[in-house]
Length: 374
Image (cartoon, rainbow, N blue to C red; front, top):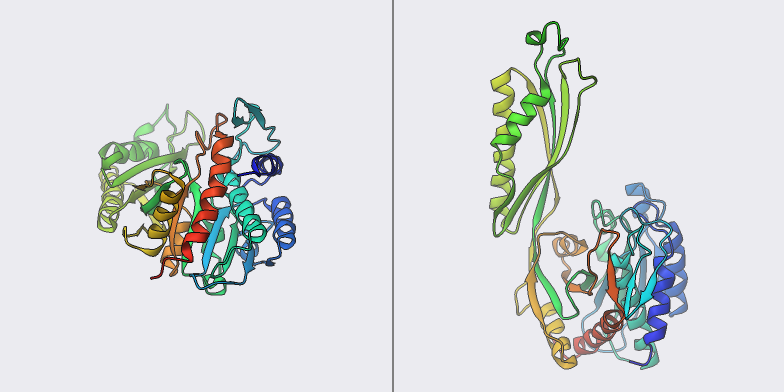
């Protein structure tokens, strides 16, 4: 591809635009202009108003010129913390941050690939069945952009979400459902030195409950975790309240329900044992999805990889993405690996070769989609 420098320059531009979750306004404005300049019909939806972000999803549409299926191309605009003041460093074919922030390849490498593929479509007069673009908000902590996206207005039935750490050619065909578990344990306060027996230690109740849980890797499809514990007011007061936040995930819906139930039961039994009370709230954050090897997005992605000499790898993941939401809303969407490494850390990096290969691969996907029918 002759546009290696253009791709790298745009990536360096985007990662220096602060866009932590809920504060995507600056990058949204930039992407609205970029999509408009590329000739798309562009708008911003009201997902920000619904979720509390200062921007909505940025959506673009390029009417079809061929007979293939309309495609949704998606990447999220937000980054995790520490994501402000990113200073990218390029050395030996690798892009990193200066070391005190994340880089933001998650998911600006995906955004760059989409923008470049659109340029290639225009420059090569490539036929396609219609291209819809969704740059979503607040993916990192709740998939709020995708959840509030009007998928009927998008119109596409096949989608590609550029948001995985595998190298180009990696196709994520299966992802888990995810329950959030929120708990408040209520005990009874007492002076810890004078009459502790008058109290019910809420932290002790929570600790006993957690000790009865099976956490971590449950089996090859299922994981669970208690990630946040907060409680107590002073070391000389028996704590009367503690809150817990945890999760259960599984590629198998029944297993996820069973794991969540077991965790809740452990809390209820611990509260009963110590005479405490427990308020438990569970919420399904997103459903699972499983794309068959002969599904349209997988067939398109596999053939495109073959055409470019890339190794296509069908994989499953333990993490969720916008694709979980799209699949539940009727868009068969696969997640593509874009080569980002050590994401969500200050050691995050991506190679310049992968930045270029991502755009090349997505452009090939657009071309292949013209030839593959349902």
